[in-house]
Image 1 (cartoon, protein in one colour):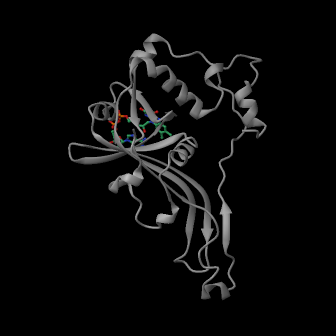
Image 2 (spheres, rainbow, N blue to C red):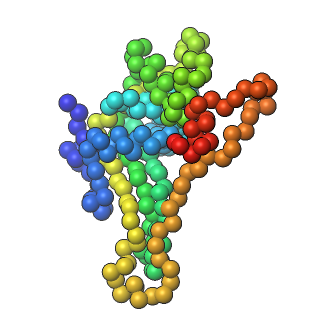
Image 3 (cartoon, rainbow, N blue to C red):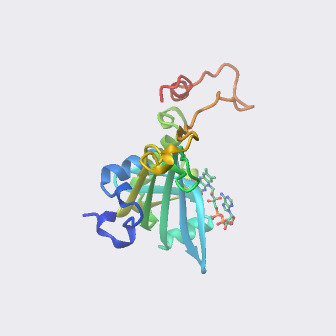
Length: 220
Ligand SMILES: Cc1cc2nc3c(=O)[nH]c(=O)nc-3n(C[C@H](O)[C@H](O)[C@H](O)COP(=O)(O)OP(=O)(O)OC[C@H]3O[C@@H](n4cnc5c(N)ncnc54)[C@H](O)[C@@H]3O)c2cc1C
């Protein structure tokens, strides 16, 4: 049985608790927006917060890196960790400077990483590639034994987690500031893909694969 943030005091959101969610569906939803997480940990009294790719499989989040990496060594040894994913969905423009805000969708996981078991590594490695571009893993060469040996895959069980989401207009529509004639509202922030730029070494005539065509056509 896993705990969620609702039952954990240190994962409970204090400010604007109405924006908080602790249910598994909400946690998975934000994690699945991927692909970048910031992973925080402490090493010899110094806190670090490192950006990296991640993937979710079921109730676990996976990260991977070189076995030689400091981050991988410290986390594999069981250091307390915090993994945060943030998406900026809009800028919120109010009449007053004070009410300016952002629409966002974020999740914070607390816990510890452990080395993934041999049998879960293939699905985790697939999840990293799929987080970069859905459908890509089936199109490319899978990891070979040498690559698997060099890569450490770590997992964190989703046990203490919280989601915080802001949506909607600025909060001053119902205040005296609504009398002020300055434009107020939301400007959505979107992530868009540019045109694919072929690798200099790409062989002549290799077409875009299905996963790329999907984003090129805006069907993602
Ligand atoms: C979008 C993105 C995705 C990434 N995905 C992965 C991944 O999946 N796996 C992975 O292992 N690495 C990934 N990286 C690289 C990652 O951020 C780290 O650089 C790397 O994991 C750190 O390796 P290390 O522990 O050997 O470095 P350390 O020895 O811990 O780094 C030494 C110091 O370098 C500085 N530093 C390290 N990384 C960064 C950084 N990204 N930006 C600025 N300063 C930094 C910090 O001060 C750090 O204390 C990704 C980076 C980005 C931006």
